[in-house]
Length: 349
Image (tube, rainbow, N blue to C red; front, side):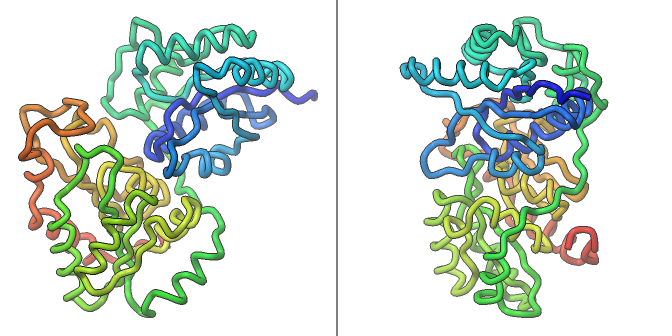
């Protein structure tokens, strides 16, 4: 049987959380078109100093390769991209990204695919949006595909993903972690300021865990979180700093070794949940309830409901930042104690 022509997956966003939220849709596309087809991801380059989810999607989505969208003013790069799509012999395009993209995004991707001879992308919503039965973002992406005629499961599901091999993590832990202690990851950073929990509460949470004398705290995140990570370690007088030290692949491997991850509505929480690690997510009110909950079987989401929930602001316009300050240290500490008191799930180790 001849090999099927390649499928172009449109994954616009560059955040880790959005990339992982695309995995159920990618798996549904693979189930429909078959394992003998090639799958390529067309995406934007990540902003400077951040990790791109494609580092993980390549393996977890079993992708053949990546194509990157150039800036609008780079006409020759657009022409080179169109030539490459033609040269690869793409069969069609399927949109697996945000369930309700901005109008300019829809126009740009639709125009590019038509110029590339792929027609209108499957799953790219138009002005008339599907009627969603769930606020959960991964489920809404599946609904877009189902509205385009592609068979999809009713709800998003991910098998427990295996962490990519990263030998340097084994050596890093052997050199830095104290043997016999349970690893607890603290992830205090997020790209959006509206998702930030007060730093002094992370300090107090770590101090309580340190007093227990049984835990090794490891601070995870990207390069932009290295500053807060160093401040936490300085206040605690101990702890391992992985933020800005380990690659995204190595961070995934490290998170898979943890007994618990405490983080915000950001990539590390989504990554840990996808790996099957217990997660406590301190979630702000900028999104509606349930929209961006991590996909995982052992996830605790802590929220403080406010009248302005669902505002969508990346930066909270209120100085008191009520939705995040409303989540108390005691509430988080209680959730941490409850989770750490349970036996370690052998499937998560």
